[in-house]
Image 1 (cartoon, rainbow, N blue to C red):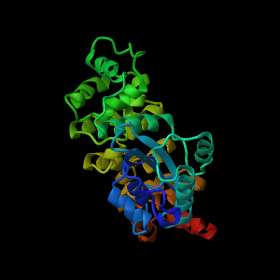
Image 2 (image 1 turned 30 degrees about the vertical axis):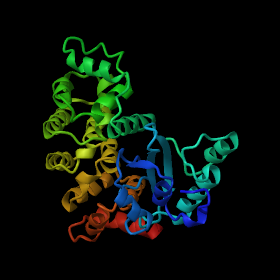
Image 3 (image 1 turned 180 degrees about the vertical axis):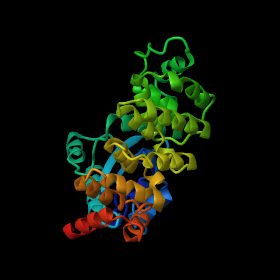
Length: 350
């Protein structure tokens, strides 16, 4: 990209990054933290595809980019609005590009002046995700760029290897946990976690589950988490631990063993709202089946909470994977009277 290249010629973010001669990686940071393939994002930018994993009507995207001479990436964290079909709002994207070009011109990685910093910081499309997401994102970027983990990685690995004192977790840091989980397929990491899992105190299990939600890992670990969730469901009165374990299975929720677990969960007469919300927000892939989704909708309506049903239904139908299945459910002859009434009320409000 040269200094003479006018901003009006730059049609997409992909083009901006390529013209600036930057190396870059894309990540979705909305529902989960996951890689976003460049080819897929280019089609999203051209409105040839809906955004695959919308969150609250937006595409939440992390762009890590760097020049060839530098291995230290810059990071943009964007929240761009989508329309009702899940297509990218072109005006918002173009506005973001215009702000960046005005502030930085040709060199996206230049040292910025105070005036440039002000322009960039007032950008309405930049946002700050939750800290646990930032920790997972940082770990993923380091793995992708083949950079070493943080100083907190070794203490956590040592903690998992120490089978004598699980209560001595005070030296464990969240960044060390996400660094380890991002490398779950390296060395013997999966086996280490598998052995430690039943012994982890809640103070460690909770951030481990938050990190696991963003990774796909070996089936032995999937099965161990399914088993632990089932045991916890039967024996633990509090809901927080159940929701954490369900979160841990998020990126693997398309797996048949997880789908079977969810189907069994929904066969219970009562499922608490925290688990129902976790299913839709994180484990939506397990709901990509008309029978399971129908059962899920019935549970949402079991407490006559039409507000909860309405908000979750509207959220689920924005996900391209779920949208046709959800509409199949509401047209089904097998739907209950209660579901038919709820859908009628929902559409009468729009």
